[in-house]
Image 1 (cartoon, rainbow, N blue to C red):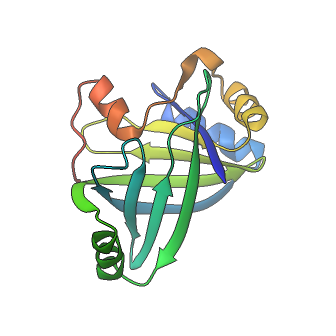
Image 2 (cartoon, rainbow, N blue to C red):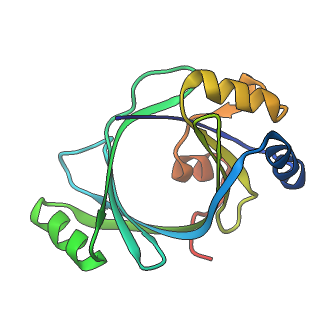
Length: 170
């Protein structure tokens, strides 16, 4: 399944939350996520991560980006796994080594078949991520007062590097 998303910087947090409430967006969850990234020498451009949310763990594999001017598009596969150790042992068997860790706080909303997320990472201002179909992403962004020129398609790590900030833990 392909993930289609954009990030939007320079948001007015109170305004975004107010508009989402007015639109009837459903607040889904507010979580601290700990992402552990793994790499191996043969899979450049592929993201492999174990995400922890409370006591739950998810193994995610994101394929190479599909070329798009407006959206970040990648194949994405995710499954819940029983523990961090289980995931790490599995990845080690496949030749993946631990690479990096980062934390983020993520507030999820559901609106028009999209996930609308307010994300906070240490040492970086909150930003918005909208994931869904291109048509719905465009509609939601417009309703929130943004234009396509406001879309960023970089990964969070690359976005942080792009703005010369440091992606770390809270």
